[in-house]
Structures are given as C-alpha cells and as structure tokens.
Image 1 (tube, rainbow, N blue to C red):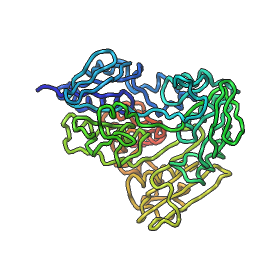
Image 2 (image 1 turned 60 degrees about the vertical axis):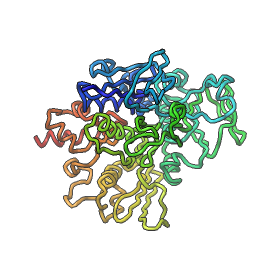
Image 3 (image 1 turned 30 degrees about the vertical axis):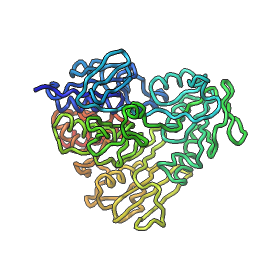
Image 4 (image 1 turned 180 degrees about the vertical axis):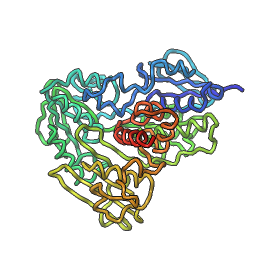
Length: 481
C-alpha cells in the first residue's frame, strides 16, 4: 500500500498536534507520509504559556511541545525555518523558500494568526518594521525582545486589555516593571466579561501594581519617551507591548484562491473550498468555535487525524464549547458560554454576586435548569463545580447561591468537585480534552504519578490550570489502590 502524502503548513500548536495525532493512529507511516513545514526555526512550543516565560516562572525550553528528535523518531519530514512561497493546486505541489518542492495528496493549512498592530503614529518605521522599544506579544522571539527591555522599575505600556494583554501585564508587573494598560473599551476583556466583572478584575489587578487607562487610544509613540493618548495625556514608556488582537493568517489561502472570511472557511470535515485542502486552528473559520484559543485547534487536530489516516471516516468537528481562563498569577478567572446574558433575556435565569472588596464576582446563566454561561472571578471552588455542570450539561443544584459560592452539594453529599464525585466523562484538562475516565485508565495502565499522567494523557501540559485537579485525582486513585 502506498502511503498518502500529507503536507502540513505550520508547526505551531495546531500543526504539531496534528502531526502527533496522525502518528498516534499511524505509528509506522504506512498510511500517511507526513511532511511538516514550519517558518520559525524553533521546535513547536506552547503559546499558552508565553505569559509564564515573560513572568519568569518558566523557561523557553520548558514550554516546548516536542523534543528536538521527535520528528526523526516518528518518521516525520520536518522542515524548520522554511516558508511556503506558492501552492499549485492543479499539480498538487508546494514550493518552499529554500527552492525545494513537496508533492501532496492532502494539504493542511495550520498557519495560525498574526498580531494586529494598531495604526498609531510612531509604532512602525517607514519600512513597516516595529519601532525601537515596541514589541508584540505573540511568539518566543517577542518574549526575548520584551525581557531585554523590561527592567525592574522601568515604565512599560501595554496596548490592549484583552486576555493576552493582561497576561503580559501581570507577568511584567511581577518582574517589577511599572505597567500601564491602555484599552479602548470601558472595561477589560469585553469579549469574555460583562462590565461588572471587568471592573472587579481591574480593581484586583490594580492592587497587584498595574495601572489602567480605559476608553483611551494611543495617538502617538515617541521612542525613548512614551505614548501620547487621544485625550492629550502622556504615559512614559521604555517599552510598549502591543497586544491589541490577532488576525487569522490567510495570505497563503487567499493566494491559492480559497474562500476566506476572517479565516479560511471550513466545513465539519475541516475541508476548505478545495476538498483536498484542509485548515485547522487560528487560521480556520468554522461556525462552531471561537478563534484564538487552543482547545478548538486540538479537537480539530484529532478529527482531521481520524480522517487523514482513515481511522474514523465518519469523524466530524461540530464545534467546541469554550472556557476561557486568565493565566495571571494571583488571579483566578474563568468565563464560559453566555457571559453577556441579562436579567431581561427571555428564557434565561441570571444570577450575579459582586464583592469587589474581596475581588470576587460570580455570574451564572441557566436555561432549562442547565448552566449555559458563567463568569467566575475569585471563586475557584465555584469555578470547578460550574465548569463540570457546563461540560456535562447536567441539571444544576436548586440552591443557586450555594452554587455561586462553591458550596453546592450533589446527591452523594460529597463536594461537587471531589474526584470521587466526578463522572468519568467530566473534562479535567480542557486544553487537551482529557476526561477523568482517561486519567483513571492511564493510571490503571501504569501511569501512577502526576508526571506519568501528564506524559500519557497531556493533562497539565496546556495552560496548567488543571494541575491541582489532576493531582487530586492522582491522590484519590493512590488512596483507593
């Protein structure tokens, strides 16, 4: 049997995960001859953990997704530091920047997204490059540029009060930098939070040393001086970190003539308008998910690996219910589902608890007794229980206030987030879609430590937010043995 030639363009989190999933199903390469092209010179790494690199709690080496020899060991033709210059869809060939070409039977675009730099005067030079003292926050090279200038006591401005901007700001503040966040909206993380939650989050982060200029736009940047805002005020800045959003990287897809609209349009088989070309991750636009998060990309990689190897021809991607977590030291925040529902919304039961003095905000949205949305800031016990209910789509406890406070009890009488009480289908690690049942199976297969469970299932290797839950399950299993 001749192996099908599959070429993956992009060696970021989506492309690397797809390669792993293909080889998990086709260990010998008998079905799929796999080539992966990566523009960066590095091995694949976990972008979710870049804020920890900026904060100094993790090294660049510790966020690698694969060992340097992974591709060689798994019979993958990995081309690093090489870009795709053209694709001939009729001949099914890919031209690379090193002058070589690669033939394909199926092509996968995993080109990710790029940082968007607002058109603020002075942020870019005449040739389009970033000005001195300006850095984006998107990759490992960006982290190196940021850390080279972010000295303790030095003023730093962060453009963008979204998820990544706040993670960068918290990491820099933790290093002693004097951080000011400039955000054009009236509250932080407006995609994931309502105004009340955004206000409490701003108060919490202010207590950690971060200042905010909300409803303000940077009008001009002067290297070595700082930012002039649209209200005429001035922010000193030795460094400006741009984290104002991302855009799907579709330039190659557009040059190929594929249909694009804020991403490469894909169906449930992750096929583009050319059925021999697929797209996954940030560059793909599927109606059932939100871009910019890792969990959808990795679920897409599993479905596409099933299809490319023929392991499960009926596999389809139906979308991903997303839970967003802010990975900032000292802040416990989760947002999921219908975060912007109001009391007046028909058919919705909306409860809200505000405790800004203690940095707590809890909002719960239910429809037909099921959790359909929540914002949980400073209430980690409630976050564990509510997320479990959201994933399982099971009826919520009748005592809603107890649920908001993390004190709701199921019929068993044990805490709802106890390992013993969790159903086997409960998702423990959202980044890698690892359930309690998979962890139990891995344990019984010989993975009898947290480190072994991580190596076997990948739990804890994403954002790391599930580490305590995995440790609790490991302790429960050890006590039961």
